[in-house]
Image (cartoon, rainbow, N blue to C red):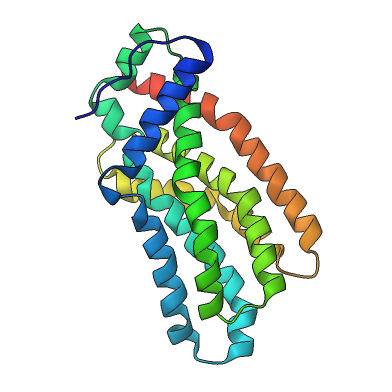
Length: 225
């Protein structure tokens, strides 16, 4: 059963929200699903393209980025809607906790829940796809810069689709087109112009991180009006 954390002040209030959201993210083992999905894609991809090591090396990095995008989408329906349906955000409002603060805590918890394990899962996935060390380093650098943007998009999508029928399917239709720049720059970081692509990837992530707490907070307030 979901309940709001006890009242606190300042940084302690945010830390309390963050701890609660992290605990909910890992409850019931649901946080392992994105990682298992990511590894499943890495396992099945060689069967789809064949055992050609050179072909796998050329296309494997892009496949991992696509798998990371889909893995970030899996927990979207659990980010906002359960708390909204349980009235948690109404309790936050009564206690003077801004919607933007709650959304920021959920954003950080979402990133901590899937990004670091995903970056660790790249290592066995790279072995399956016959990727060399340089490519693995570029993938890891790209994920370090790009996963905050993916987390922000996931939270924004969750807030926009909260309370709607068929929100799970709708979330994919909303998030996937918006994630195309991250996917392009992330995959582009594996090419000859990798440094420039990484800079664009970082800039896109920063933009999403800056606007998501406010846009998601506004969407949440709209569902209560």
